[in-house]
Image (cartoon, rainbow, N blue to C red; front, side, top):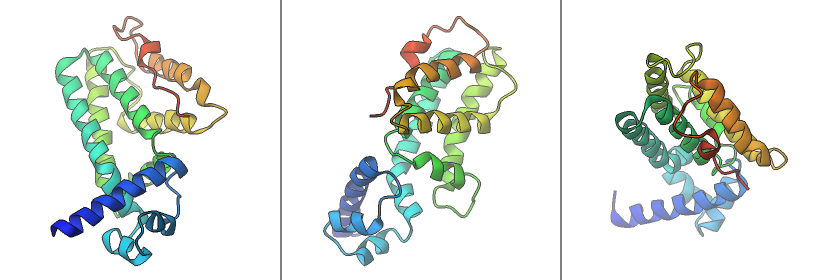
Length: 197
């Protein structure tokens, strides 16, 4: 990609990130193009679909969360690694209102531009869950798909103005329900994500 094309693409992603953080993933592509001071055709030339734009925007964060899972697996006790990663995932997903709805749909649709990134992210969480289960630190009746659904559920809570004040408390409830040991060295209250405002 030429330097000027890369610069234009990066500018579009920066503008899209701000627009989506402010208005959610359903923000108009035309509005994003207007904010970026380009025509809609220019935006669509770089990102032919909303999902392609979101994949480009979110892939770095997905990669960071996947890498974080590997770091936690290598450096933290199983139950702490699982809760810490869950906290980071929920905190990240609340930055982009509505992203979890698209992620939940994309993970079931191999044709989606977001599919591969979502599958990789879910697999990273599943490894942490399996590790905690093998150490008898997490309940055995849930799997990676359940964990991914719990992230979506907790992120949805943070997206709701009337429920956001309860998000920290409910994160602790859910994290405690996943773990079979009450003796985690990461207190549930400290593990709770900051409520999305």
